[in-house]
Length: 316
Picture 1 (spheres, rainbow, N blue to C red):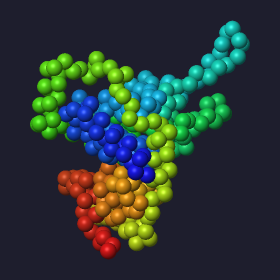
Picture 2: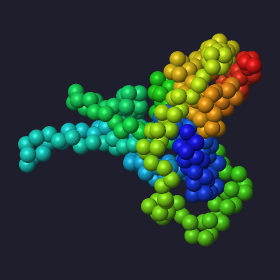
Picture 3: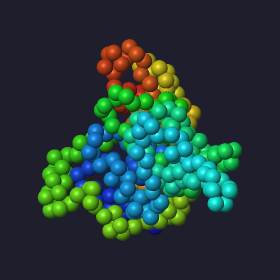
Picture 4: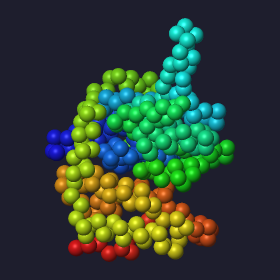
């Protein structure tokens, strides 16, 4: 456990060294990788969302594909299609970018619902069905979708059913002043994200080690009183006066898994209530829906989640 745990420490440090000046919650990204949960990265343009995922893929030697989603993208552009070969007189499968270990779906809210839905089976069941034939996706298969927090005109907001299939919604904010100054100094010295050679990055882990770490996370202990605490939090979301929709059973299962990952990263073989609380915001902020009157009153979803964490008593 300690050996694979140290690998994630190296991953954390390597990302910080390469992506200087980005205010990214790296630990949340690593937790989602540990559990195989898909992620939405949301932030204003230019905060390094795409570069961060590319760097992480290189650091673990994973097969990486990127799809720039636009209104004219079709499901076949993501999943693939059978193409007729005039020479052999047979159909051959041309696989789409979804057949990768890490898929970056850039600006997912700019593509129509039909194309968004094409990712549903892949994300939920780790498989794709083409012309009645089911094809398995790689063991690591991990989707990171990005979207900007501005310019919602002409976009297609993700439906609740698909949002619930994303483990985390991670907010990438502006970098702190000192970090942004360092980014400017690096640019002055010749660094450019466009011309940055990703092949120069030395991997610090392998896909096989990530899979092994996932197995170790599953073996983390979860005491019954801590499990009851998690369940009480889930139920509180369903009866909160400001919420029209609480956490789903899928959210509860995901909360259990990522609490284990949080404990594993802290080199413990058991989960504490603090582990549960630390992952609550990115887990719930895209799943809970405010009532219309609460929206009019200026209630913020992160504030509701924080209040729920305070309302439920912590087991001793």
